[in-house]
Amino acid sequence: MKLKRVARATGLVFAVSLMMALMAPLAQATTPAPGYEKFAGCPSPSENPAIAGCVYSVVTGGHFQMGNKDVPITNPMPLSGGVEEGLVGFSYNSQGGLKPVKQKVPGGVVGLTGLTWLLELLGSDALTLYAVTELAGQPQLGVTQINLPVKVHLINSVLGGKCYVGSNSSPINLHLTTETTSPPPPNLPISGKIPAFSLNEETGIISLKGGKYVDNSFAAPGASGCVLTLFGFIPISINGLVNSQSGLPAAAGTNETIQNIDTDLVESPLVYP
Image (cartoon, helix red, strand yellow):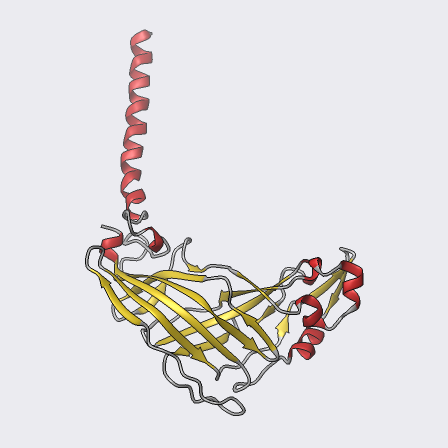
């Protein structure tokens, strides 16, 4: 009996060891090498063998104006993933994409809706409004041009959880450029700035710093899913109110975004050796 118990125990240890050995290559394949942790959102070869380069890009500042609402970008917004040869085919894993970073909207919910009586009912702290930019399609990245389909999530507890400007089916299509725009009127041309290039020979990371990317030719759709919930259980649709107060939908030539962007690029085999 004792020999049988030892045999079973030995067999169990062997089975666990074999399972760990089989799992180890997968863990190694999806974990960036030391020094490349920021590129964790880049798909590993096991996730997407077509990926040739890894990208980590951060919007460090600027503003996003749609209709008559202008939101300053005060909190950095990271975008990470991987690209195929020629900087095409951007994709990302569960750790990548555009991080959901809150930006404070001037005027709060009262400014968004025009309902001044909400101040007396709920107080100013409860009416703080945030805008979170989310991807609504596949970005196309370049050194001087970035195409970014997005939607903007308006976040406050009294608006419900689905108040958006733009959607996956009707995104805000940003065509960001470092060059000079040619917008429809009444907007006038504005110019960006090409980022400064540098190479870290030790890590192989290419850095593009201080880029200024602009677009004032995009259109912005109307809001959808905005519901004012009073006393926690009385829902009132306020899409029309938000649109009229915010000047939405807003035609091309009446909106503008300026985004200061720093980007790091590196070959995928350096991230996942």
